[in-house]
Length: 157
Image 1 (cartoon, helix red, strand yellow):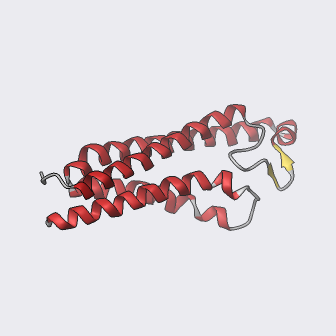
Image 2 (image 1 turned 60 degrees about the vertical axis):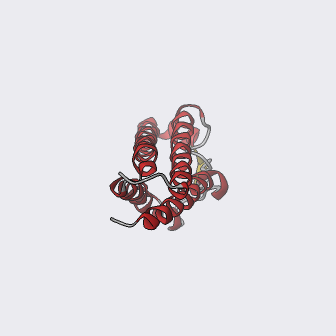
Image 3 (image 1 turned 90 degrees about the horizontal axis):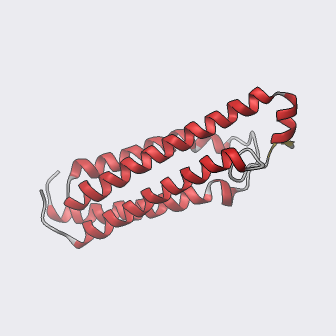
């Protein structure tokens, strides 16, 4: 276990805040599945078709979309919980394995989820749809780089 280091402490705290923001995003995503008028955050229609219109045409499709959103919210929350724990109890203690695990988890999720948003198959409000997760990711990355700086100052792998 490594000695205390302010860069690692500060970085791991920022990583924790980013992970908690992932969890917050997941909670909002989950709640919107039940209460929102649109399909999800920042997506009010799919090529002009509202959720109500689609539900009138085929309720099973709307139910299926909701079930995917609920599952997605669960996986975002689960990732956030794991990353928060790794950041606070592993990275903060200077554990390299925890830093790597905390980095790989959200990167894998974002690498899979984000590219589909840029193919132009549906329109969305960028600020409300992707803005929160980009902000959380920015906080997390700044923290991870700060923690990395501290870990590198200590040496080791």
